[in-house]
Length: 191
Image 1 (cartoon, rainbow, N blue to C red):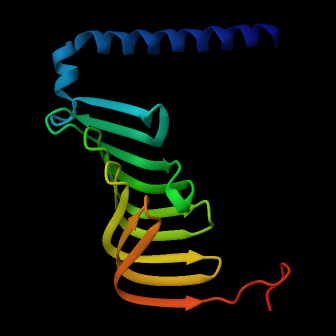
Image 2 (tube, rainbow, N blue to C red; image 1 turned 180 degrees about the vertical axis):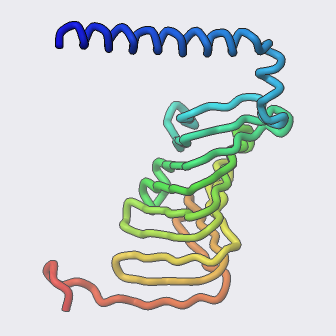
């Protein structure tokens, strides 16, 4: 039994060495130009697990995280997958957290566009759902032309089109507005 273990260990070690040698040989056969040619033409840099923080006056203004980012130098933008954006000190809304399946960062303009299963949560307990959203860091505004659904502790609202001015603490739903006001809680229990 002891000899059988040694034989199995030797066979496994030889198999691993043979596989490593084969892979090394295959990689050596391709020139760097061939490897680069296999990458998509429009992508200049591809990153896994992007973390970007934008600072203003020595304070962090917003943080962007993504599972994957592909930077395109020609138009100075990054295409993102699995996006998480946190806006700090967003006026009356407090801290805002946004999640989406895909996005696009235009760093110089401080703009982030996200789409597909967009979810927004504020420190005040509001939750917003839509399919596409734009954040303009210079104007400190969030906008969309898509249908939205907004939940808060006292309200359920739907509509189409949204403008949120973070500095003024105001929100405008453009059209097709439907709202249900919910009763206030008394002493922690609903009436």
